Image (cartoon, rainbow, N blue to C red):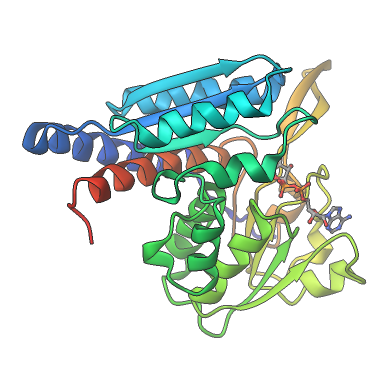
Length: 298
Ligand code: NAD
């Protein structure tokens, strides 16, 4: 029985963050510009609080100007839109991120589409989605999670995925759809699957690349996976785990890691795979936005 290579997203993210830090220092020294990232968090969702804290910490350690706006769960939509207008106009801010999900009374679409596309470092604005879908990947802000997955896939398989079959499980706007666009752009033959897909295991079994973005703990099993496939696990599921006989809450992915490790050639763990890469790609997008605003990138 073989054991898959464990793709260390945490180490790769740290390496990337290091080069972002060096480039940020150079941008400040040579052009007097500090990339600015504004994160807006609304309400008390505990997972969102953790994500926002991590994003702020990483932004600061990269040398960014980092701003957090914490709004009450019952904030008026008009007040959120006013804040976004202010951030759009603020020259010290190059990236704006509104942490999702939003409280139910707020219109997620109105709010994400109010962000200036040139500051949309999450890549959720229709302009950026359109560019990505049209294959203008270099010109778009690409959503951070699929961008991070793509870097890990291309590290394993090279930049040209011609002749490879890729199956994406999940069709969300945040992960599944942009992931499929990126894989297609790299010449993979792409299948998007979702909750209405029939014989999912059989479809996945044809894949050289599997990206699971579902939100169902350890759904993907060994017998779904083609020997030698590269498996990227986006899922973050909070589950009860038994560690040294003690029950604790922990995180697990959408892939049964130990089971699938015996057939895959490479696999990302949860935690320590896609998550850290997502945060670093946000920093990469913000740095790029600052360079674009200064006319330093075409
Ligand atoms: P979502 O709920 O928007 O989408 C889930 C998708 O899974 C849907 O398209 C649905 O059709 C599909 N699905 C549901 N049940 C299925 C089934 N039984 N078989 C096949 N497909 C099924 O979720 P999302 O925002 O795309 O996130 C997916 C997972 O990734 C979640 O666990 C989320 O927490 C995690 N996530 C992680 C990161 C990260 O940085 N690591 C970032 C974003 C999301």
